[in-house]
Image (cartoon, rainbow, N blue to C red; front, side, top):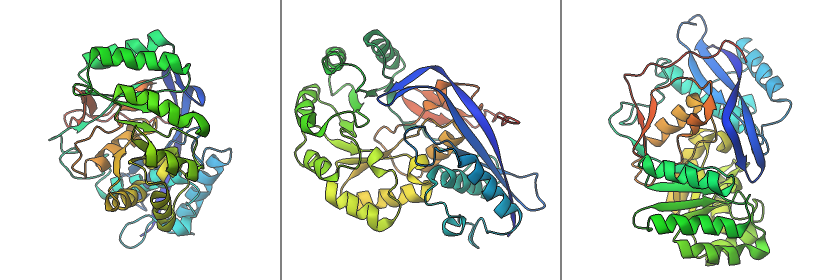
Length: 362
């Protein structure tokens, strides 16, 4: 089957300076990919390519050139976009080094197969019958900014909070955790922290010991990725369960995934389809983790509502009870209007809400 492909650039503006341990972010450049069967332009599938600066391996100057080349290859019939079963042709399109592009193309094809209505999967979540429990994300900032976010999330009914740490001095971050535990015990409120690799290996264990006093659910990526021996040691002896996040970036082949899990033996892994290379790649991570008794949850990576929708519907294929890391689409001005809504710490797909239109151009 012949397909046609186009992309639309769009710049998302944050409602505030989103601070991480890698610095502040004020905007996010994304690309909406649309695919349709040749001769049937009235039905289009849509996916989102939203690589993150300083994190995604495909956030580089030649990204737009790669997208233009892909469109030309597909539109000219020089490369098949999908095989006979409708699955993305990863090898022929040379997408291993382009996980965000791969995710966008994969979801666009899935959307097209379902009629081009942003219904990627047919499950209880996409039908609006059940919600997905999510954590409330607390962004880095000064002490008062973080504490105000915490109060707001508790008012909104969240029972799980995730705090990004690593930008303030450690004593202040411990004080914030102390204040949280004065407000709610571990039985009442689950707390996760995300260090984004901010700890040094030689001091990480001592910091984990101090963090353990606050009965945390887990800590994401305590040390920088690429230090497998040190991370394995931390996971073996840590008083706070460790979740791998950035560690999974750039690990594509099944044998590489297996080797990483068996060497490090983390308590959890965190799956970001934009960074992991798509939904099929994330499903493979889940299967490998479950086989080894490793927990997991799915997290969006600052996509707009187009990408968030695909990730959420993918998550809805699994019987999740643990809060997932979804719902960051609220951070932006000029987001795409969608049926996704958050209520009492759960993400819902409200079928009565219509989707908004894509931008005409960047």
